Length: 455
Image 1 (cartoon, rainbow, N blue to C red):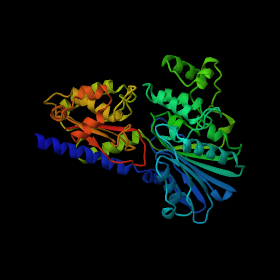
Image 2 (cartoon, rainbow, N blue to C red):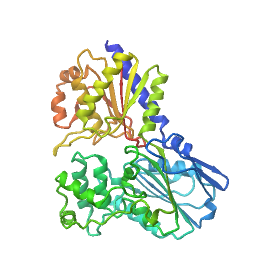
Image 3 (cartoon, rainbow, N blue to C red):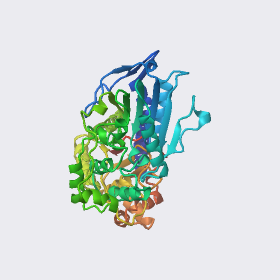
Image 4 (cartoon, rainbow, N blue to C red):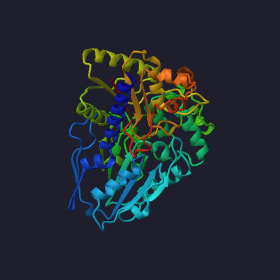
């Protein structure tokens, strides 16, 4: 039994790693971009889910006096490198700025001139987050038509790039805001509605900074639910679908205690509105999604099918509280397995966690896996893996975890309690001690989370 369990664990981890390889930013961008001499062609996905944001489009870079590339997010560096290789011609002059969580691109390994780079903070903004955001705003404002801005946006940029709504707010104020929002248990749409309205960079304000007539193209790797592209990195280049009234409602419903300078805006109901769909500033803007969580789940399903499984994709636990998600998905998997012994359940999206004030180490994927382990029966054949496609789960070095019916007993032998680790939001220490973590290192991507149930 133990030998079979180890074999299934190896299969599950192999399927996930192969999927991450297939989802590399370069591969995804190569499917959307084609440079044919003077023409640059942008192609939308053939079968978009949640609505594609752009039809096929052709640009002629030679027609613009200035060309600017702004790359932001956890995948900023690989997206920018892919763009340079796939879309720029030798000798063509493109200005570039890049904000990422990593050290960035080494000049000696860079084809052509290296971009101006900023190392933003995550999950809280830092000084470079502000410097980078304000440099991008200044670069956009400096352009006059004919000019072309290419935005390469991936998840994680909400913290990586931040310019406060009011100049007097320092980064300590913004960091306090982020800590409150990340730990409040709200879905990402609510969190980002507040971020957008308290920033001079987010919610379409980066795109709006450019002069009328400047052509803008945004290529996106999505870490948000389908149909919510304006929430990717809090949507700096997209029209914002949230409103100030949403913010007032969320603030009251979540009983948030924001920094005093922000509370004053809510108390006096003086939040300025963000740019909305149909605004003149978006007349020359186009957007295309190169990859999202639906594509990630489909890719994992293809890998599972090739390994002899019958995969079923279920997105209904997306944005569910992590204990509710564990209960639902275990019930669904058991029902599927009764019908088909080779069934494999794949679930995408993110689960919500309520983070206590004093916390250990771990993230939502490890919390979800621990909750599943606590619910497994001793004879249950399920092997369950959950990981973030960015390779980082919360404040731990793990991408996620893989558990089965032996996890509880192995933890007890090592002196750990599943229930205590869950209560302390300290899953990593337990899971690492018994070898149940999945560690990939940062992947340079961010297409939300992947979960797989197999036996």
